[in-house]
Length: 177
Image (tube, rainbow, N blue to C red; front, side, top):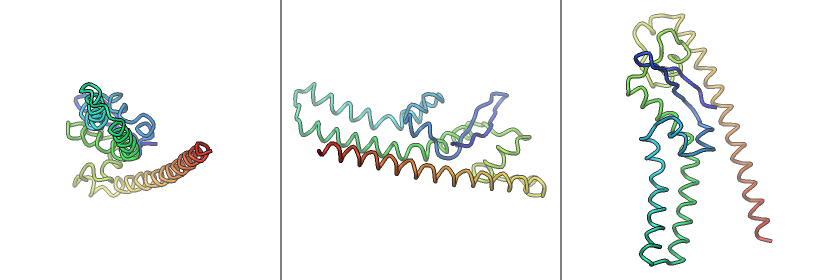
């Protein structure tokens, strides 16, 4: 599960996310649509669009060739697999960085969001933070808890991927009969 951080700009609040995105794992490039993030939707949808255009152009120009369609199909399946595995790992970080670039910042009184963003180097520690020993200790405890959650998520992901691999192997075995 991704870690949520609170961000705001001119009293407009948004949620930033860090860590693996299970939502992106299951819903892929639709997640940027849900978050109204057109830039990342286009980035992650464009390879699919290229494959569709190439496939349709082979039909339109009547140069339909079974080998070409097979290559496009294999290429699209490989691309889908790669994006399915890559997208959940990187999207939340990119989304949160984009919000920070747009001027969204965590509220001053939100130690959790500040600790997570500063501890993961999304934001710099201020001199005030560094001089306040109690605040730095609170930040350290929050970051330690965050790291434990990340390890649990990684173990869960590995178990899920192994189970998916076993299911695929089982179906391939059943199809071969």
